[in-house]
Length: 229
Image (cartoon, rainbow, N blue to C red):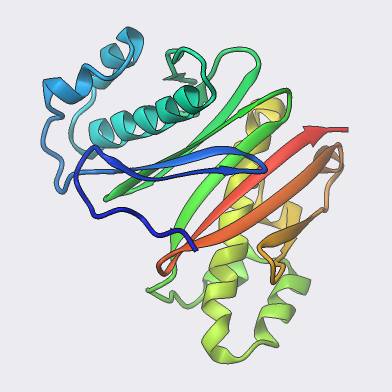
């Protein structure tokens, strides 16, 4: 369980070194007001150029994600590199680093790692059950496993699997350069926070996956490390 600091916009919510890299959370302000110049000044030049071209929540989330990754660079003792975006919106990092970003309206999270392996991070709420989601995002064996659980646990288990799959997509997309469907992989949650990933298509069988999850209140935070075999 991660316990964030009290919410103060543009301050660090949490910082942890985990097996998949450095994960940092940053509190975001309410609303979509323009980001103040003093906050924009914390970005690199190329990041600022992108940020000032954005409006509303897109600007707030872009800035928050880049500042969160910047904390990771600092923790690793290296100078922060500009992190812009590719054509799909994923962060572009310098050679030797992999990173991923996720955000909600109040929180931006960045995961930064060294090495050839790719990483992904995702944050999901579990407080609003939505009927029909499980059938769209789970394979038949996963759905059967979820339906065998007590009703009170089914939605949380579904969201956990969904979140890990989102992290998997973020981790492998820079290599595969294609959409990865929910049915191409199965996720088997572990009671200790270490989750098993079962690739179901040849493209994904080329990777070794390590997946983890933890909780931030009633939100599930998942991280994935994917390395080509």
